[in-house]
Amino acid sequence: MATTNPTSSKSSLLLNASITFKLSRANYRAWKCQVTTLLSGIQVMGHIDGTISSQSPTIIQDGSSTPNPQYTNWFTIDQLIINLLLSAMTEANNLSFASYDTARSLWVAIEAQYANTSRSHVMSIKNQLQCCTKGDKSITDYLFSVKSLADELAVIDKSLSDDDVTLYVLNGLGAEYRDIAASIRTREHPFTFEELHSHLLAHDDYIRREEAQINVQVPTTNFAQHQRNSKQAGLLPLPSDGRGHVSSKPSQNMHPSLLTDRVIIHARLVALIPVVIDLHHDASTAPSSVILPNIAPNFCNATTHQL
Image 1: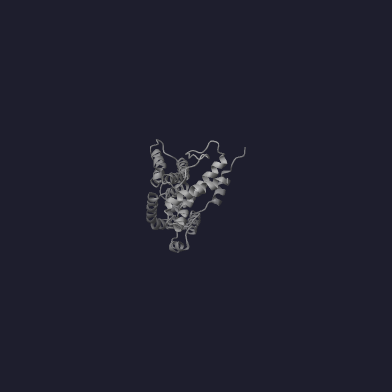
Image 2: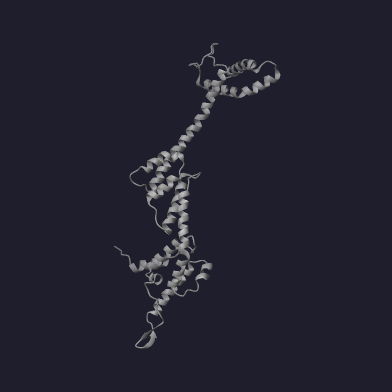
């Protein structure tokens, strides 16, 4: 079985380790996290936290000044850290911090300038979380917008608990999610983000299906009500059983295709009523309420005979 060489693994990590963005007031804590983990990984964190004392070029030994054997190693590492920090800044910041000659003094200056500003950024993120609402966003987009803010807060300050994230999400949902929100709040164990996403997505699909059914039912209900109103007003003839008798039900012997065609004709006739009223009102002095019942049966019977 092959074994991993620790020295080789460490060298590979060092080659790929880097600070991925430039320092700014908005990202200070995330930037600081990358710097400190990198310096800790190569075991030189003491140069910026003060646990490794600075070295002078010479020391006094036996009453005389002699070269300090530790200075060269300390100075080399310290200068490399300064270079690392400055390379992770913008050009403007480089000019501001270029005068510091040790890694420790540079680090103290960075913290003094950015630490207080970072607190205001933390408060800004928390305020965004409190004000975040679903609005017109999809449930997935809304959830991940909350998670993005929570992840940013975890990097620059501290992580939110699952209950905190769930509370921020539920507070931003609309009234249509009231039932599922109540169910989630009363659960004994906290939801993970993945579980919360799954439950809300399923409820969102249910809402969409309900809306689709309502959209289908409304036109049908309106048409049926219009037919009933027209019959009550005497504007439409009742269907005939073919033997001169008016019937409220279609003949059982009627062919299905003929029944469908008659329904279509009946619907078209309803749409033509206003046009017929206007035409005959202009052509005759007789009241339209008298003319229309005479026209409608003739039109319906004539069209039916053509089937």
